Length: 262
Ligand code: NAP
Image 1 (tube, rainbow, N blue to C red):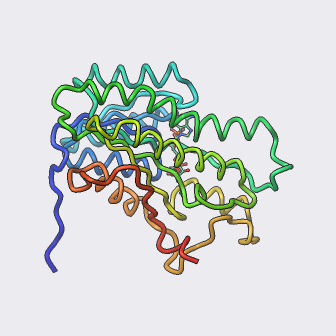
Image 2 (spheres, helix red, strand yellow):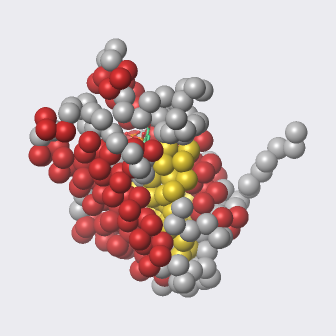
């Protein structure tokens, strides 16, 4: 079978990834850099972020780690400004930063945990888009190739027993993605969501430790083929960012090995 190659699909495109220091976001950063994008990425793990930046640059990529907390509108403004200053503009963005929480029934969730999950997963995507969108729209040369992908979850479109705060935050991500897609549909900017099922990352490993032997507490369930790999999600994200997806706007693409198909 012929090998599929997408070499340098994003050559010279300035890109930004939130939550690029681990798991799915890290793999998106790696794939974008490999395909020629100039990638800025944020997180809170400075050591890991700087090590990834160094590795990608030594490998011939163009990458820059910038520490920024997605829970802060001011830090998202600064992150976008630094990316634009570094790479001369912005045309692609992936909002991937996210957290989960201990398995608890809704009434047992501490309000501080609820607020932190909503601040990271929902406010964080809003703050990031609030600054990414004007930067992308004003980027000379975007020519209709501006694109944003928000990482939601299959739990953003159904009930999330045991992790209600997480599920609610992902409903918000899908809701704001669909609204924003309509807001900018005539301005050369596409905005889509990707909703992964279980993917083998540090977040999933922590969730499995938290639930112990009681797999009924794993809200999303597992697909017949087992958890996906970060690269499975990265492939879908890069497709949605690419020109091949030029007429896909306001979509919520499930990447879940049929987990949600029951
Ligand atoms: P992960 O390995 O734990 O990575 C989470 C990333 O988010 C890290 O880069 C982390 O940065 C960053 N982050 C968290 N809080 C942040 C904050 N306040 N400011 C900036 N960055 C922050 O998790 P993952 O599994 O790759 O998850 C990535 C996304 O996919 C999340 O939105 C998650 O909800 C979604 N998702 C995951 C699965 C799954 O099964 N893994 C399924 C569905 C959806 P630091 O480590 O540097 O702090």
